[in-house]
Each structure stands twice: as C-alpha cells, then as structure tokens.
Image 1: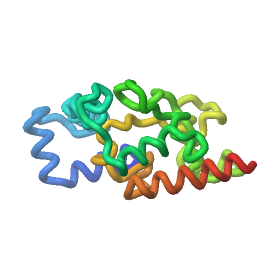
Image 2: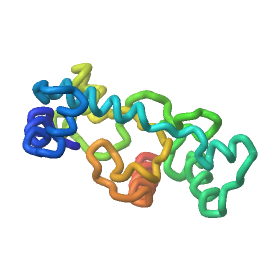
Image 3: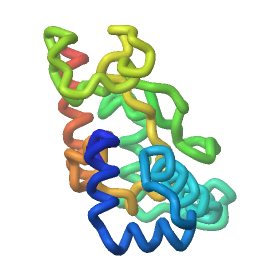
Image 4: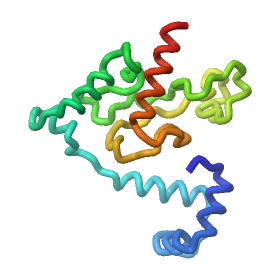
Length: 172
C-alpha cells in the first residue's frame, strides 16, 4: 500500500467495508498492523498458480507466441536488461532468487538520501539500503503496479527502466 503501518491501520479502520470483513473473519478484535499482516498473509496463501502457460511450455505442452518469445529473449539476454541477475526463466517455479537487491530505482549519491531504506531498515546495514525482496514472476502480468512502491503501471515501463539502468551501469 506504500504506507506506514499507522496510516494503513487508520485507513482500514475508517472503511466500514473492511471493518466488517475483519469482524467476520477475526471476530470483535482490534484491527492493528499484526492483524492486517495476518489477513494479507492468508490472502497470499490463496493465490495458487500451478498451470500457467509458462508451466505448460516447460512441460512441452504449449508454445510461446512470437511476442512472448521476444519477452523470453529479453529476460535471458544479459546484455539487454540483466533480468537473470535476479530472476530465472528455467524450471524455477517462482522466477526469483529469493534475495534482496537494489535495482537502481533511485540514483543516490548519499546513502542517507534514500526515501525508502528497504532491507536496510531491517538489518541496519548501509549496504542493504535501497534493497528490496526480489518478487516472483508468477502471474506478473496480473500484479500491476510494479516495484516496491508501485511506480510503474505496466511491464513495458519496467523493461524500459531496467534496459536504461543496465545500459547506464554497463557504461560506468
């Protein structure tokens, strides 16, 4: 939601719809960040994806369209956007290394200027500032907006950014 927990809790508590949904599921209990996290976790556990087109392609039961194959090429060509640094396109079911990474979303010359310290908030290590969990690529076309703060509305915007960032990194 790109909010701090206090703001998220306040927003959910203001909504009669969400208050009623929480009451139905959890009973008459105070809605706080812990309860919200539990609700989100339960929701995420219901997202099941085991027979995507990519799964069928890996099992040789389907083929990629020319446009899909072009996307596959972009993903796998390390001179284009360096996607494989964080995501896999082989038989890895999730398409993620499950690590944290800084993909250059914000150009920072002084580590104290990050608007979101990311994983560094948890570890306290300056080297983790601006790093975020690398997401799964499962159902990626259905999960807009993209990046930890939702700054990109389309996958095209993500690819364009990553290609520009990779080109910049390669030249410096």
